[in-house]
Image (cartoon, rainbow, N blue to C red):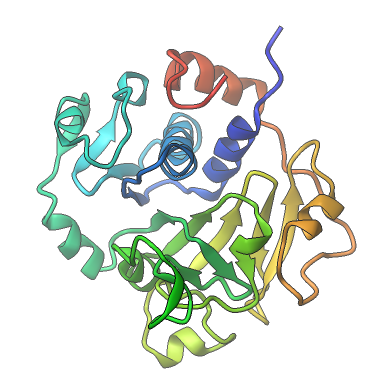
Length: 271
C-alpha cells in the first residue's frame, strides 16, 4: 500500500501541472534548509516529474549551467555554494553560466522559480528590505537575479512558506515586478515577460485574476481549511472565491515516479 502523499509531494505535483511541453525552465540555487527545500528540492522534483509525464521535450536548467540533470543522482548537499558537487552531477550537458544571461535577454526562458520575504496582492516580491529602505527593520539577501526573472522570463512560479508576514497588501521594496499597481502596469514599463503565474505555499495555491491582476485563492492543500489560509494571509482584498477546491493529490503514477524513479534515495523530499 502506498504511503499517504506528503505536503511536499502535493506541492511538487501541483508545480508539475503548471509546466508545459517544449519549454525551458530555469532554477537558481538558495541557502538555508527551509529555503533549499521549498525553492530548490521541490521544484527540481516537479520539473523531473513533468519530464517523466506530459513534458518530455522540455529542458531543466539548474543554477544557470546544469542541463537536464539526473535527479535520482542529485548531490546530497543542495547549498548554493556546491559548485564542485554540481559539476559531478550526471546531466545531459553543462552550459557556460554566462550564456544564461544571453538566453534570458532573448526571452527564451519560459518559466522561472522564485521566492521572497514578502509577496503582495499583485504578485510583487521583496527580497531586499523590510521597512524603510534607508533604515530597514531587516536587511534581506538582496535582489540577486529576481529583477531578471520577473521582467524577462515567460512566467514566474513563486514558492513561499505560508506565514501572514509574507503576504502583504504592498511590499516594502519591489525586487521582483509582479503586476505592480494592477492591469496595464507591466505593459507601461515595457516588461515583456508575463510576470507571476501562481503563488504556491505549504498550505495553498494562489492564481491571479485576469482582469484585476489580484491574487486569488485557487486551492487549499488536503487537511488545510480556508479559514487557516485566511488567518495566515495578510491580504485585505476579497481573494477567496465562493468555492475553493482541494489541491489535487498526486496520482498513483506520479507518486510511484517521485518515490521510485525521481527520488529513490529520499534525499530531495522529506519522508
